Image: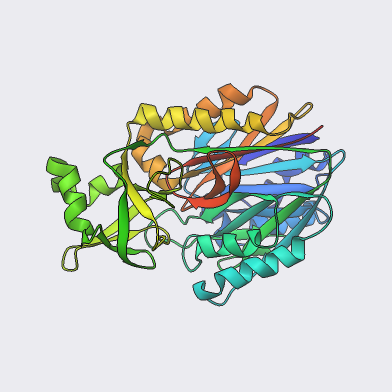
Length: 382
């Protein structure tokens, strides 16, 4: 397995300028190109057209992000192109364009049908942060495929900015993009961790609708939330970022995905979560410090060792959350550095900050949609 990486820093560059910067990747004759960058690189077709011209046979996949991750760290103004050539495995790309969020499960099932095949080890998945139900999409895929899923939901970098995905057909603001990785010699390791700590007991969801949480233990969700926050409730809505929920299937569970709180409705006493709520489950309030979030990223990296150990160079795809990016501020690069320190010099880092992250729960089982969590998939060969 061989990997090369280029960071582009001028979204308005011409095809000739992009070509000159990307020329070194062509020597690798890559099978896969992963592309993560500032939305401005996706708003015009120049970069996508140049990639198609230089790498017509490569599977191309990626998305827009307010923070592209590379071996050099995190940058909100660049586009990182990572080229991969496999020695033993093979890959396949697939895309689908659902008409609405209500079709997310069906879209996932159709993507699974396109990727299903002997030797499938993992799926890389990139969708949009708006107009897609990420959890339903993931369920549609995993109902058919037993492979590990990694990836996330694209972000346009602001409340009203458009998000994009990229596939071998070009740039889209509607397509969901997936890549299947095949071969018995693929070495896949994965981990996810937020670094969040429990802040009070788990409470039963007694009324919710989709992503709107109305009641916990029969009490107004917003009233209960404010009571736990105490004096910090005066800092709402800014304080939402620092106090997410953990979603649990049963009261005694310790592991479950983090759900960010993205809005409040004072008149109704409700909380708006970033993704769907299990109406039969439990929620537990969480909190953390910057140091704890960075430690969580290190845990996610260490958990990748539970998988097969790769021989030689490997690709580490990191998908973290834009909520963590805002929380950590000037320290955001430290969580990427923590992952790099664990994985060592043989791992090339590539990834992005997302509106939702696809990864395992506690590094062991299934795949779930997370918020405010660092997820890592290490891809190599043995």
